[in-house]
Image (cartoon, rainbow, N blue to C red):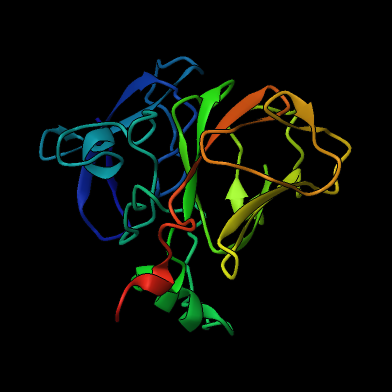
Length: 226
């Protein structure tokens, strides 16, 4: 059997096995006499097939297998999340008014409740909406002071209606907003600003709201001593 030395001087003996499309790292070799053209040498070092010792890991796994990709010596395996886009959130600079908003959230008396609207019909039935002192615009948008966004598309996004508490005379007023959708009070169309009493029903689109006053002639936050 022919003897072959590797580049580092170690002796390897060879035998033939079917070609798998890979040449030994030392370069092509001459098949043993009598081997057909579809064979190439298999090298053995100390009785262990060189295929396993040179081109596999210590478990004898083939680097050609899909579960064990070929890597250069010393190359580390990629992390599980390597290649994924990472989003880093920078600290947002405080904007003007942030401190005022935080203070209002921490201080309930910065915008105390003066009344409520309860959804008694249509989408959002059972929800309670708080009314504040002064002008309460009602609409589906987040900019509305009273946001009525429970799935009724017939409610205008901006200023469908206005519900006002006037603290000097301690009375409540209802007015139609800027939208084309109509506003009804106890079944009557609202065109001008009209006075509204506790227990009245307001209809916007497919939604019916029942009005409940907290502040009135009998009570106002002005009556409470600090």
